[in-house]
Length: 245
Image 1 (tube, rainbow, N blue to C red):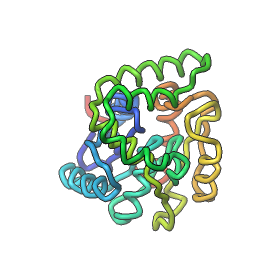
Image 2: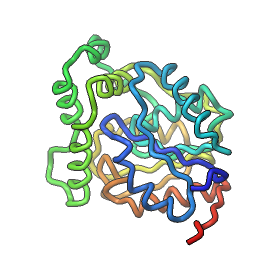
Image 3: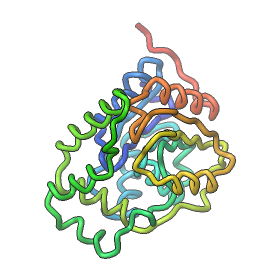
C-alpha cells in the first residue's frame, strides 16, 4: 500500500509465520490498505520485543500504526501499547488474551530455550483441536502445521517463553473505542476464562464474533475477518485510495 496510508501491522500467534497472515494481504492490499505481515525474530522478554518493534517501525516509518494481533500476537500488541502508547493508534485483538498466567508452567518456562525443536513443536501441536472440525478450520490448521515446520528452535522456544512467562496488560492509555475484539465462538486453544477476562478488561471495546473459525479465523474465514478489520479501520479514521490500474 501507499506509504502515506496508515500501517496495519499483522502479528500472528505462537505457531504462526508471516505467511499465515497472507489472507489479510491478499484481501486488503488490493483495496488500498497498507498491510504488513510480520514474523518477529526470537525475543525472550517483553522488553526485547518492545525494543525490536521500535526498530522495525522506525524502518517502516508509518504515518500511524494499527495492529491486528492474533493470540500471542494480540498480547504482545497490548504490551507494546502499554510501553509505547504514542506509537500505536488502535488494536484489533483476535482470539487473544490480556494475561499469560494461565499458560505458565513453573520451572518449565525457563527450560524452553534448551529443548530440542521436535519437543517444542509437539508442545505447540498438543494445543490444537484434535476433534473433527469443519473443512475450512481443518485446512487452516493444516496450513499452520505446514508453516510450523519452517520455524527453528530459537523461534519456537522464544515464543513459548513469552507465552509462558507470567505477565498481564492493564492501564492502557488507549481508549476502548480504538479496540476491536474478534473471537471465534467454537473450540479454541484459548481457555474461555481468558476471553471473559479480555472482555472485562476492555468493556467498551467493539466486539465481533466468528461462529466457526477455530484458532485461526484469519485463515479459515478470511472474508469475515477482513470485513471486521475494514470496519474497525474506517471507524478509527483510516481512509484509503484505490490503487491506480
